[in-house]
Length: 226
Image (cartoon, rainbow, N blue to C red):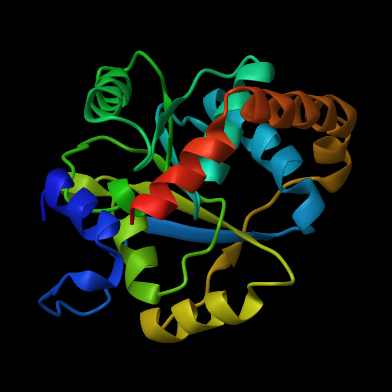
């Protein structure tokens, strides 16, 4: 499954026949799988807190998975407002923009890649220390593909999933398929929320920029083409 085929499959919606060989749902033992149970309205605050502590955690590279192109673009604008460099990769970007984002991440120019499931499989990204599931995927196999971006070549890795009251059932399905429970990611709530005002302000600015960029119109046009 190459990136071009993955893109074609996404654009064709339900019109394409797609066969995927079943390989089972497996994650390696060297992967530490954790979760944070967090209110939906402060997900960004928790994300900013983790990203600000990457160096302390010994993390050199991270991929943040989101469910939609809009969320991907909005988070990229949010991190920009928070002076956090990141590349964004989703299906509404042109091929040249995607290649540029991948090059930035793979070459180490940026240590954070924001992505939809367009990057969860079929792309050669050899070194990823951390995978963050900002949005929980709908299917366990997508979770396995996402977290499989780390622990390549026998390396250790970390996957952290943000669980809200709306997706507890999804994480239970994932745990049932994996045959193991995720561990709780330790963080001090008081430390996290100390930055809430700055993150909320950045979110408001990012949302205004999203509208000014004409992203909603591009998204609407892309849907109509499909």
